[in-house]
Image (tube, rainbow, N blue to C red):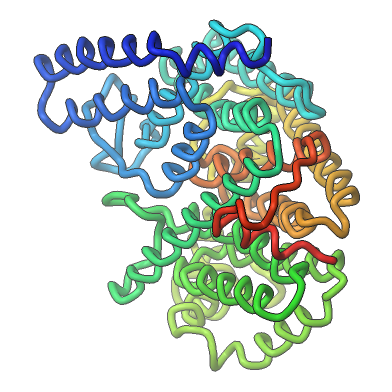
Length: 479
């Protein structure tokens, strides 16, 4: 029964259907749209059918598109804009990776509808928490529409964006079946990260803050900073758990490749998030002394080693004489940008006090760049409780997996994920981290992998049959 779908997909019928549908769809699109939109639409249709035929390839496509897909502008609908808007605001932005994920998800639904034995959703320890949070979002938004706080179309699309990351999670847990797949997919994650870091470094000479690739006119350095901190946690953990000398040095060099663009994002939330991430690595790693010595040297040499822009950013936050706000830390007055964020938190809490149980619904209140306050004011105590429960269950599952992975090839992955999770929680104090596509797609993919690791079938592969990327991850296993 389990092989029926594979046998069917390997036959001529799906290929014939693919060619016919591509021909019909492509002809219609070319006849009714411009050349640029036609190319993009045909690409998405191709991804759709490729994903239907090969589920692992679909995951590789998603992983590559998370940071490396361009933005597109194909028009607007009311207050909803597809692509990067001409002006900043509350318009919903659909990036190319949103459309890629949509195409792959449709292929997933179609595949599971045809082959019932595949199952739509695999049972995992996080399912209840995810569904609880999903229900809280939908219920709060429906109530917001009923009371006139949420425009229905706007609320619908934003709610879908909040939930699209869980599609990545369920695709990972449904498709991945053995450790060889995990190693191949992790290699794609690392390749995507390395390319993104190199593109970030290439932006440094422009003098502008470094942002993620293909961010368009208005880049989001805080988004790129959050992604880099999460990936830095995974890579540093690999360096701390790898055996021998070449492997740790290689991972350390990789970490340095990420640290440079992270500094030049000038993202204070990301810098702040890196502190508990490093502290957790020190607390849980058996090689904590190496990391402590490195951090000690960085603290001593920091004023001399850090770029001028980084030092200026720090001084602007606490020590500059102009552009000061009303809030203080000790004897230092915070800058107006940071003070404005505190003001938005205060306004959010005041708004929540008027709708304490279910909030105003998704998009029902003013924009706030702080995850927990935004969840509270949009979904009330019910939504915040569901969100915190989800984070707690995620930590519990990751901690249990880390204990089981001690001494295995995946110890570094689980350790890095724990540190990355803590970093994302801290990052979310100054950003909407858990609804940002370019952070949450890799985060929830890694969450799926971490959840799956204890259940994977053990499959030993002779070294000579591994690819180079698989061998890199395998050779770091402690002995």
